[in-house]
Image (tube, helix red, strand yellow):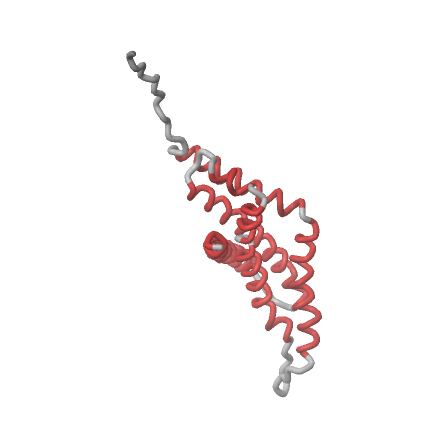
Length: 181
């Protein structure tokens, strides 16, 4: 008997081009945006919680803070930058939790076998979480006039840019933590 050699097919490695990876980043980002926009409860609580901290807690604690003679001190104005930072921080870091949910429901396995580099998946998740956090921070920033914070248009653009950079870094940190769980 003679052995017949099987026909070998060349293996083509996918996910090698920049265009394919950018498409993967865009698709993961779009999925994160769709998940956020469809979850009305998450949208509402992400806005209501900082507003409650700012107006209820700020009004309650402002009666405890003494201002100097001839000075007026609004504690809500003092709290406002911290509330914005808290909004961006928690939203960004908790966006990494979506990886845990994706793993629980099997979607992570489907993403990992996609023909893109793993870095593109992480980049898409980071951009999705950072976009949501930046939008929520911008909504809170729009309330600056209600707590007597003066602002200029150039300052607002700078703040939004800084919120986006912070959100990207904290989203990456959240994804790092979630990937180890």
